[in-house]
Amino acid sequence: MAVILTTALTTVVASGHALSAGAIARDVVFEMLVGAVSGAAIAFAGQWLIVRIRLPAAGLYPAFTLALACLSFGVTTLLHGSGFLAVYVTGVLIGSGALPHAVGVRRVHDTLGWLSQVVMFLLLGMLVFPTRLLPVAGMGLAIALFLAIVARPLVTALCLAPFRYAWRESAYVGWVGLRGAVPIVLATIPVMANVDGGRQLFDVVFFIVVVGAILPGATVPWITNVLRMSSSAPPPPKASVEIDTRRQRGDELHAYFVSPQLAVAGATIADVPLPAGAAVSMLERAGALIAPAGDVQILAGDYVYVIAPAEDRAHVELLFGRAEEH
Image (cartoon, rainbow, N blue to C red; front, top):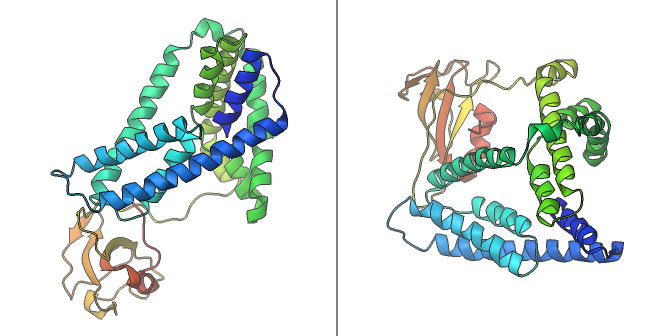
């Protein structure tokens, strides 16, 4: 939405011809519709193909999914749709389906995502001159404070109102919500279009984003305590266990934190009434791995790794609680 509106407004300013609200709304609906349909179509085609081809190396599967992302963005853009929405839809659909070597594919994409962010911030930083930020510091600081204190919390509260969030939760999301460099990227569009004042607009936006990231970021511990939003979740497991296979199976491996309130705390592995087809693969205790012999006692604070068919996950979670996602 932000990309579409920024492009439309830049077109209006650069051309000098006003666009009606109806024309902008029509373009938004068209680009969103084309983006969603195109992204879904490429995702279904890619999903059908990726489970049937046999690439000679596991490292080629991340290259295949990356090619699908580029194809989704490129084809949709040529169709005058939203390439960003198309890539998002393609990624969600492919990632939620059967994916050979899923662990390796996700690790590569996670690495590429972080690397892209680092490179993006580096390149955007090279476009900024500190001497140009000083003249817009007053305006930028005023807008940044208004966004952080008034606009963002108010809009967040309105957006979360239908979901019946408590006021403390809405306030917390509005204050420490995710910040990014997207506004800076969008501010380059008027600059590239040679819009009058585009360079000054870029400097103002850059200043706002930096202040908007530093101000809430530095106060996260304080606002967490003030709003009583500290998490009581157990600490993450120190061991990382991954299963990477090309063939898709119905069995899943999940880690479960053993809290003192669970009935399995203090029981031996042999005494735990696991469903047929499920088994304890190992235990983690204080960072050390323990072989799952039948007489091994499960203690509070342990992490129990259970492998079981997907349809038995609800049964296993009745014994061990919610699985830890890591």
